[in-house]
Length: 321
Ligand code: FUB
Image (tube, rainbow, N blue to C red):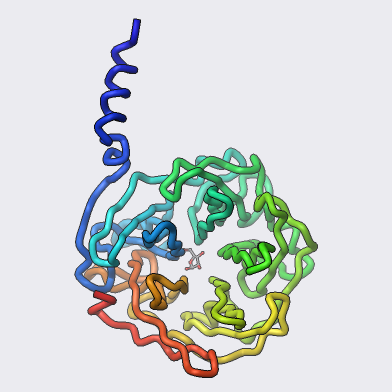
């Protein structure tokens, strides 16, 4: 005999209500910040099947306190950068049994139909920040820990830096030849080659020396140029370097984005969508309580010069629509 639960599930599935149930909220962006009903930080972006996804940490620090309180990551999607859907929380640090908390910066990337989410969390047993990776068959989850352990822990990089928050802000890039790389770091930029399974290192940890590097590395490619953008100094501007090879040498090209209003961090993602380039970042401009610990994701256009260098981003309140 078919159970009542199974019957209801089958009816819901047949009616398409399951995919609707994954949607938490639909909203129209009124410019920058794009998302105003929640504070969102450290955006990573992904384009998949014509949809633009934003993955962000949820800044939850209550007024009047000022510290990072980020207990979950959020995902939003749009097909026109104006009408957005917020999906159910797809991942929290609790999904990593070895992690203590702190949903710091992250990035999702697709390979062979699977979505890999590289995250920064605080490790339970190894002092300091660590990088983990979760996997899903869908860009909106559910995601599960892909390894059962951290990919990078603080004790792997103690020769290079003594601080215990240097293993943060992973960004993953798959080159045209299919080889994947993960860059990350704070005060020192690191990178490794990843195995094809995307969850194991396939090289030692290398360092990249970049002027006044703070954090928030992001790697992208256009034509035959590789771009490594990053947050510089503190409060942060976004600067960048270019190279003809993912392994460098990287040539510093200057400031890409100035200090973002009312936030000492700025954390960017750069990607192409429908033939145009976008600069996704955060500021503290959502409302009177916004600031460095109640940040909000923004999107502005990004333009290139004929020689491949990037024009400085003009941050706007109109945004891209
Ligand atoms: O959100 C926590 C940290 O602040 C991130 O990991 C950094 O990139 C900075 O935005």
